[in-house]
Image (cartoon, rainbow, N blue to C red; front, side, top):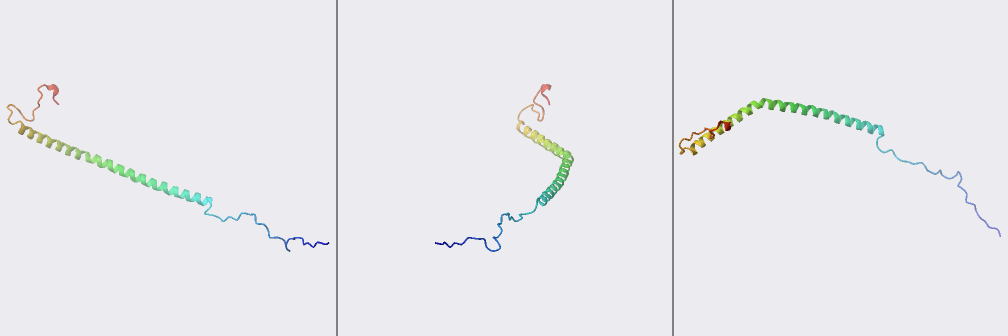
Length: 117
């Protein structure tokens, strides 16, 4: 008895090559481009920070000089307000104590010089 068999052989010209290499597409910019972008962004940020510091320093100087020039005016306003209050207090004291004999409005109530201001 004879057995007919056929041996499995590669096709003529051989099999197709096995693809074993990774085929990954390039994704995004390279490292040098990213480093350059970050450097430029930080440089711009420091530039703006410097401008902000200059402006803040100028505003602080302006506020200081405004306060220096306003101090005499504010002191004069305070003195006038204090004088008006003392005058008001004098008239109120005169009205309240008008029936008391020997009372002098505006005079200190202390007889001892130790307590005088």
